[in-house]
Image 1 (cartoon, one colour):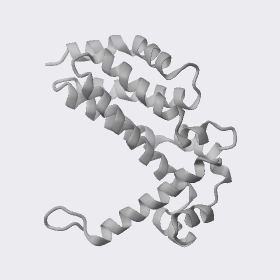
Image 2: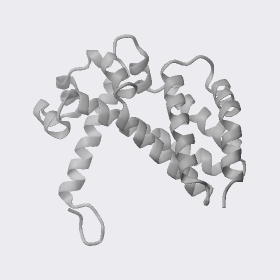
Image 3: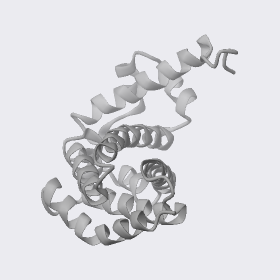
Image 4: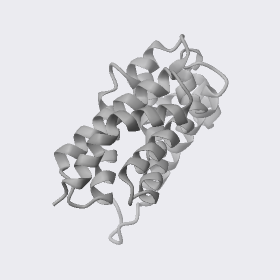
Length: 203
């Protein structure tokens, strides 16, 4: 429940702060260890709360990992939003810039390092084969940005472009084959004609 002015109640603000503190603790631990090597007790200790509080807040280890993946993907997409807005007049450049920025951020992020290591099957699954929520959330967020940047664009086309771009970006982030800039260029060569068609076909 929020206040009449739309501001969160004290209880809501406290819960949000608790969640952020625990997720920050996960990020800090992943900077030095693999996900399989991180225990719920270590997360609790790093966050300054009890182990039971971590369970009460997230429900379990998989739910905690998923919440961390979702939060960090939102942070990546905040930066992607800025890149797209900065190049709204050139759809291909917006695509290239957004993809390059995403992959550059991912290349040094503890989440991606954790997923990319060979000892994190659970985290890999949550980001890929069991990553339905992550995929749909990122796709919807990116499609919304495309529709707001180019009003009148076909929503179904924006969703199709977003899903393919997100799937490819996650794949390249987890298993890079080139530099972020070169990969972004390759993605633009493949998807560029489609985004041209999408933008040119606006009503």
